[in-house]
Each structure stands twice: as structure tokens, then as C-alpha cells.
Amino acid sequence: MLRNLFKIGLIALLGLFALKLVFGVLAPLFGLVLWLLGITLKFALIGAVIYGVVYVVSPDTAKRLTSGFRK
Image (cartoon, rainbow, N blue to C red; front, side):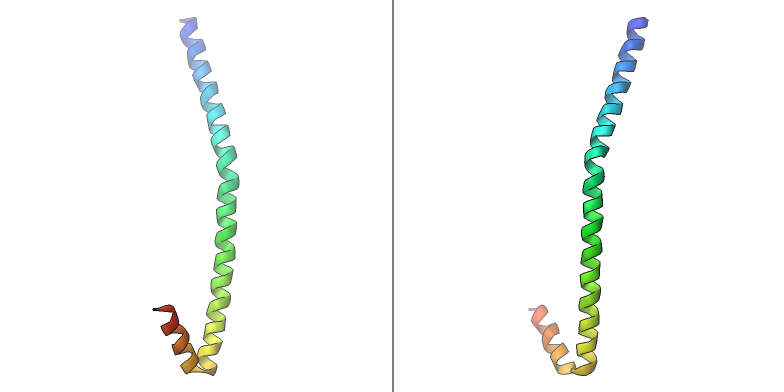
């Protein structure tokens, strides 16, 4: 019975070690993905604003830009 308790304790410690290892590696990767997503959204917003300005100033140019991306 004491041996079973030690086995359960050892398995629990190994599980905690594995969780710490997994979340220790995945947390920075998750942060990197969120950072890249933020940069991508900023670029998309800047592009949308520039496209909106071009659309208001010169609609023909905006149509050419749109047709260029849809090829």
C-alpha cells in the first residue's frame, strides 16, 4: 500500500513537471502569435485607411487597385 502511494506521488510529480514544461514553452509562443496578430491588424488598418483615402480622392485608381488584387 505504501508502494502504491509512492507511485501515485511520483506520477503526480511527473505530471506537474510535464505541465510546467509544456506551459513554459507554449506561453512565449502564444505571446509571439498575439504580438504578430497585433502587428498584422495594425498594418491592415493602415492599409484600409490608405485605400479609403484613395477611394475618396480618386475612385478610378481604387478600382484599378481592387482589380489588381483580384487577379
